Length: 173
Image 1: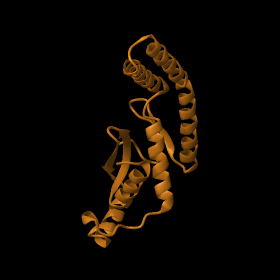
Image 2: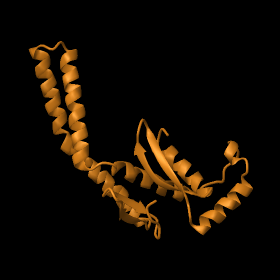
Image 3: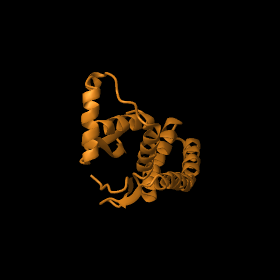
Image 4: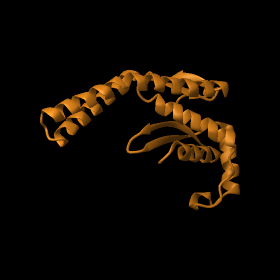
């Protein structure tokens, strides 16, 4: 999928047909995981919607969704994406990427002493921005975490040590 909003729309519709949002990750775009919802209410809702919207599977009419459900799923997806890597992992990924980019810049500029100096200066400036990006990311995460907690979702740590927010009474898939 191409955007968090489109992922949230898909998740809201999927929940109307007996699935629930499980996770999202980056891999040549965003990849969202949905699982079958084992809740009896979800089964009843799915049966009702399949009966009322039989053409939905072929691109027909879909059940209307509640904007609050969309916003909540969008916040969960955003939090999950921002919480995909730790600060240390993000710093490592950024460091490798910046180093490769600076080396490429030096070679592209002619691989002489001047281009080497320019590449080193660019590398140093970008490396100095990594801590700023991490602080900004933590603030962004905190804002979405507060929104999810205010909506009644519960923080749960998965087996990889990653914090996830789930509706009350739910467990990680």
